[in-house]
Amino acid sequence: MRARPKPAARGGIALRRPRTEDDLLTGLPLRTRFVADAGRELAREPGAPAALLCLDVDRLKTVNGVLGYEAGDSLLLGLAQRLAQLRTTVGVRCGRLSGGTFVALVPLADAQGWRTAVSQLQAVLNHRQLWHGQTLDLTVSIGVALHPDHGLGTETLLQRAEQAMFEAKRLRTEVALYDPEFEADRLSHLSLLSELETAIADGQLRQFLQPKLGVADQRLASVEALVRWQHPVRGWLPPSEFVPFAESTGRIRQITQWMLEQAIATLARWRAEGREAPPIAVNISTLDLQDGLLPARIEALLSRAGVPAELLQLELTETGLMASTQDPIHVMHSLRRLGVRLAIDDFGTGQSSLAYLQRLPVHELKIDRSFVDGVDQDAKRQELLGSIITLGHGLGLQVSAEGVENAAELAVLKRLGCDLVQGYLLAKPMDVARFEAWMEPAALAL
Ligand code: C2E
Ligand code: MG
Ligand code: MG
Picture 1 (spheres, rainbow, N blue to C red):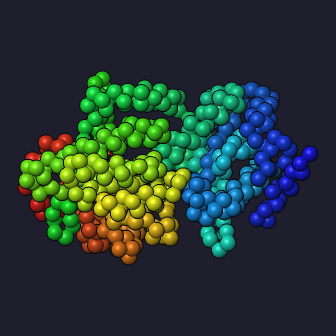
Picture 2: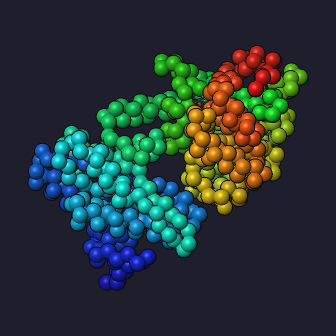
Picture 3: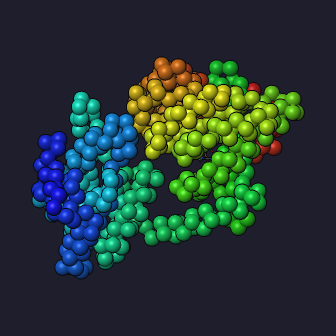
């Protein structure tokens, strides 16, 4: 028989010796044993309130990718150790489901007690670790399913807690309680996804355009293309209804291809009509960046339409870049060599390190709208926004801000030296015809 490695003693953490149904790294029970043990515990007192928690370590992929798997393992061990302590102190039963996903069964005095229990867990679990001189902040996203309200069996509860955890990640709320509506939403999104292919072929997608203006010269600097779906039954659908699901199933590539064709066709038409065409920015997803053929496809589309590459911009979200399983940088370099302009979208939400940012061959940093919202009323946030703008300029990048909704926010951005602004204050996304009408007298008094 092959000798099993000693129970995890790495990083100074010693957990008890694992059994075969236990995880070798952390010593915690794996899924099968957890389900059996938790099932027995729940069956002992059938009506007793309890919360089943699905906990997923945030940014584990980033830590693995940037600092290496040993750093990731060290985070997981830190978390496992804290979970194991909770077993002795408050009777929480824990297990490891996979990768950075853990599970915990928490006894409750009553169903309402779940919030307090989760806060107590968060206080223990979210912590800071030092790893070879690097500070690693460990936080977890938590999905909660309640026994007996959301199910009696451990498998059902586990599946529901997992669904809630995905919702917490998607909405970036840290914690989400299972809601039967999730299931209805999931089914509705699934049926939308199956209709997407027809939607593209039947011309149900629309290109909307929203301008970005220079703060200093008040001129139209570029336009962002945003997809809308004019669904024959459900009416106008915003991207939030289908883009995230298209991303998780790979269908996003069809949307990207469609949008690139539309944007390039619009640019070609503007040029043919002798208009002074602003560049158009197209949003692309993480999956697109893993497609080594993307630069060649874009080059072919541009040359077929006779549109210079400088007129096309691509926006890549910071979280997308960080979540990329392959290093997206070489595709980005090929795109840049083509002459396409690159921007990091929703900057500030993805926690990229300065070292990583420096490696990205981008031209523009687009600050997420959460930093702009109400910034005029909060001196601390103005300081933060100012630091991001200084950071972008320090890296030699143009800095833009999205979601500018009122004059006071705009005044702050102007004072802090932001280069470009986009938002409802200046113009909402419009269909192409309305945008063209808007573009004529586009000089706005900022
Ligand atoms: P994004 O790229 O960050 O786009 C900006 C979003 O902010 C747009 O939402 C826009 O309508 C909205 N917005 C603009 N100004 C304001 C404002 O002043 N206040 C507020 N509250 N919102 C403002 P939209 O069109 O719903 O798009 C949402 C996201 O969907 C986009 O975020 C982008 O990530 C994604 N998306 C849109 N079109 C495409 C596409 O063709 N392909 C891909 N991959 N993603 C797309
Ligand atoms: Mg964008
Ligand atoms: Mg954005």
